Image (cartoon, rainbow, N blue to C red; front, side):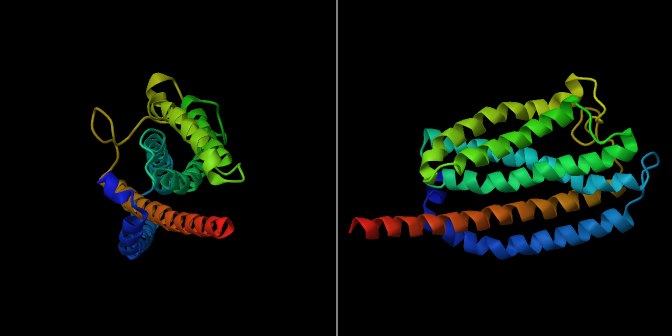
Length: 240
């Protein structure tokens, strides 16, 4: 499967079939999820309407973590197996993942201000998420900090793999340390601690944002592949 998709021509052919379905899923998920979250779901009995930030904050956090895991895996494939599309995939994932990590931090601050009485605290969850955002930025800086992209590919991939060590810290920080951030409400040993009236809008928004993320990655991979092809043609013309 990986060898099949590693061929740029096959990938471009497959990408042509995925763009419009992803656009439709993203638009439907975001529109329906926004309506459910803003108009249909109830306010929280303690947090009031501030809880509606959850419908953006939580899916953004999930996507920030999952996208960094994808970045680490793509970097691993590039370092170990030298797959042709691995570096392209990593370069496409990183800016989208950084955007969701930043959105997580911003919505978390907006949510924390009325609930905690402060925009920011240096607790385990918030600090580790900030570190994750910096890993994204560090990858982008290394990957794009050289005159030729291939020169930054290997150091950026190594940094991305190191950053994977931060993922369990982000996930389990609320269990390991006493923090202001609430513990998990969905993936927990005692079962979900969230009402279905809030759960469905949350999952709908996540589906829309997940499709939007995949759409950004596919479109950016197409762009990067096109740029790489033009660069090869330019090199061939110079050589001839």
